[in-house]
Image 1 (cartoon, rainbow, N blue to C red):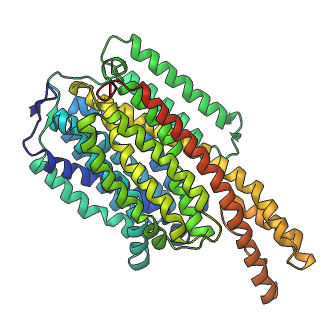
Image 2 (image 1 turned 30 degrees about the horizontal axis):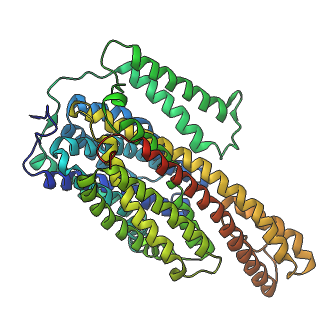
Image 3 (image 1 turned 90 degrees about the vertical axis):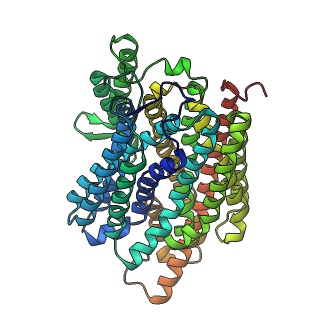
Length: 527
């Protein structure tokens, strides 16, 4: 087994081949999440699942993935990155097959939980391996390739998912992972070297228990909060108490990491020895807080307000992904030359600018060409953000702490993403509800007097599901057409208004993240 006591001593002579193999597994796990999101309506009808059950099929994967990252990152230091990657890809592949074979919501949910476990195991090993197999002067380009793949998956997902759902059925969005997973495992066995730090590590079991319980409480509360109206779930148990308990357990976890005599799950020296690690993680948290909801907001706009199919939506957003991939490669090379700080700052500022442009050009009847300038700027900004963010965060981290650093940084960003989804989702929902009533009342005047009050209430109620209101049954054909047309116009106008508020809030968060770049230490700090 290869060791890497020094960052300058790579563990393989073929690092790009190894990175390509690892990224196949990484891409597969990201792609699966994007594909499943567009299959929700099909799953509801085909396996006779309720809306809440299907939401849990989506949310359970995110919950398990978010909670386990910090532990699986450290496990890579203990057991070796290749071994953990192979375990992760194997679990994910088996779980994918079980998902495709599921005949009930309960079976599918259990298989999705197992998928989340597999994804959480393999994900941190890719980042840790970059530190092990690339010398410092090549890591920017390596993170560039990594970032390009991360940018492509959310856009390719709807395209691939739309094709599979249309031609093969929902089971194949899972079955397609099986041959890819098997091939990836074989290639990893053949070409990926064993990678582990020279010094043996032990797993902090008390830390694992505290971190897992704390993250479970916070993540569950944020994911499920809106469903329970941020109130009581059952008896004395409610969303606020679950989140508070999770936060207290995480505080206890941090205290334990500082006082325990063994080897901590999250070495606190990461926040003192890594030059950009503390600031990079804060920037990553704020970045995810502001960025995570943008794709969902745009997908709802394109599919519901503009009436595009999932496949058409993916194609509209495809140029954004292509530019993000190209930008990632260029940003990686630039980060190697001048350091990631200024590249990251420019990328975050560009992202914020793109959102402002999108707010100015998106309307209830805007075509693709109206949206293109904003999407192009967002694509360029995305490419110039993810790679230098990885670069400045992991720069200066000792290889013996690579797994722990990868797990901690991934967990912090995931936490920012979960919190951002909850906050931006609540903002979007509240803004939509407020705007819908005004738009519905404005358009109700064009309907027969007997329908006006029902139209307003039905339109406002439909906003909770982010969809235009259906016409009541039994209406004459002419009134049905009027009702549905007015409802779609009201929803589209209200959604655009709510989307603009949400995107401006996201832009403000990205500006804050850009300003935080002044706190980054390391190469590029001096200019």
